[in-house]
Length: 322
Image 1: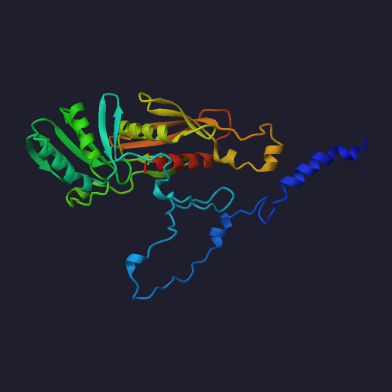
Image 2: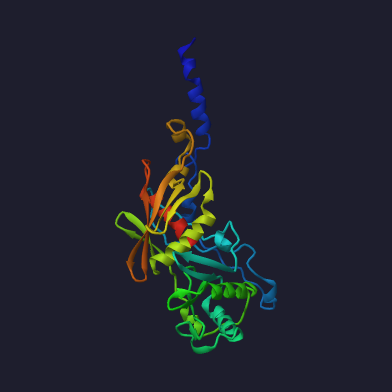
C-alpha cells in the first residue's frame, strides 16, 4: 500500500475542520465587530405621531457587567437576558428557610409591598401598636412584621416573628394574602421606597481571583443562592447542583467551563478528551462583616480552571441574585 495514502484520513479531517477559516483564527471572531461598530443617526419620527402606538420592536438588553479586556484581546460584555433569562417561571411569593429561620420573598419592590403589608396588619385584627415606614416595621400585639429590600433588585423580604422567632402561622397567612394579590399592583409608598437599595451584587477582581461581593448576611445569601441553584442548575453535563451544605455555607456543582466550551475542532481532534466535559467546582460563601458576604468559585477537580472560567461562572451565578 502506498505510504502516502496512510495520511489521507488525517488530511481529510484537517481540511474539514479548517474549511471555515477566516481572517481571525479558524473562525471569524465577532467580538471585533463590537470594537468597529459606529453609532448611526437616530431615527426621527413626526411630531404629530401618537406615542402610544410606538415602542421598541427589538429592545436591546443592558450589559450585565463592565468591560474587562480579555487575556487575548477584546471581549464583548454579555447582555443581561430580557425577562431575567429565567428558565423557570417564578412565583409572586416564595418561601425561604435556613435552619430555624424562615421568611417570604415577594416579587415587588418595598414601596409597592408596604401599603399591602399595612393593609394585612389592619384587616387581620392583629392590634397594631406602632408603624415605621422608614425602617419597614409594624409592631402588633400578635407579632412583629418587618419589610426590607430583597437580595435581588425588585424583590422584597417579609418577616413575621416574636422575639426573633418566626411565627409560622403568620407567614402562612401572609403567603396566602400576597399570593392573592397581583404583581401589577400600582399603589406605592414613597416613604417605603427608601428601603430599596442600589445594585446589591457586584463582581470584583481581587488580584488574580474574581469574587462576588454581596451586601447581605451570609445566612440570607445562602438561602437565596440555594433556592436559585436548585431551580437553574439542572442541565445534565452542563450545569448541575450536586451538594449543598448550610453549615459550611457552600455548594458543589458540576459545570462546563468557558475554556471547555470554547475548544475548537482541532483541539478536540488532537485531545485525549474527544468530547466536551464538565468539572466539579465548589461555590463558597464567606462572611466578611455583619452585612457583607463574598462568593468564591474554587476548583474541586484536576482539570484546569482559568481566571476567565472563574469570572464567567461567577457572572452566571451573580445573575441569579440580581
